[in-house]
Length: 305
Image 1 (tube, one colour):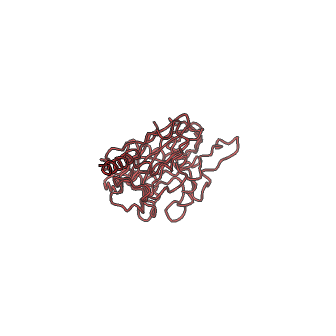
Image 2 (cartoon, one colour):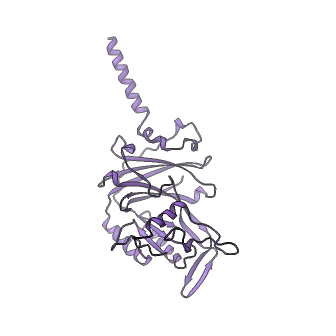
Image 3 (cartoon, helix red, strand yellow):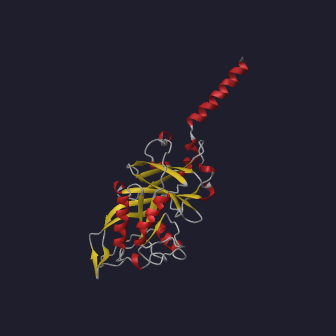
């Protein structure tokens, strides 16, 4: 009887340990606990419900610049496509010319209107990575899930509408994705939790990337209307790529480190929102991509609560 009691007690303790520390504990070391204003043991990891999504979303990466006179027309088109396909088409404005900063990103001394620097290190890395061999010959150009069409990843704005329609019609969903955010204004701490379901793709080729996006900002922009070039001093820049949550341009590769007990994968990230940004004027774009071809398999937008 004594031995039976000890065996049952051991089993009970083991079972309680499994319930007390769910799969999230496995990857909690990736998070900055100092950004949570309460005792870390009380941190509220989200619970994901079954992902019933069946559609592939589209990320338009609009490579732009504040002295690019034709870029506003491309931005207008991107916004129209967002409105036409709500929650299906998402946009990130990347301020990175071929070769890095380039003339379209030039920051000029006063009294010039173009004293504001839109660039960031990750965005400039995209420009350097894609400057050769991808069809990036100058702004404005854009990628659509970074799919290669006729040997080129970057497309003129005039091609975006048809390419978006083609991708939606094909609806080739290889990876499912959902994400949730906890945000704490006291510390400006943002915690992103992403669930990845690699439906038809090997995990070793999937990278997860998270963009920190500013919704809008008023700042001067050159624009050409007909044969007239003007400076619009109250121009509204939208969906501005400001940073990647983990500072990695092409994110993290999935591995057993992120495997949950249910066979799906979860990546947790933390990020302190810089003081110059209003959290209510920002959101996060999360996407799963092929780390070899750069193609984006799925993207979702996550608002900051």
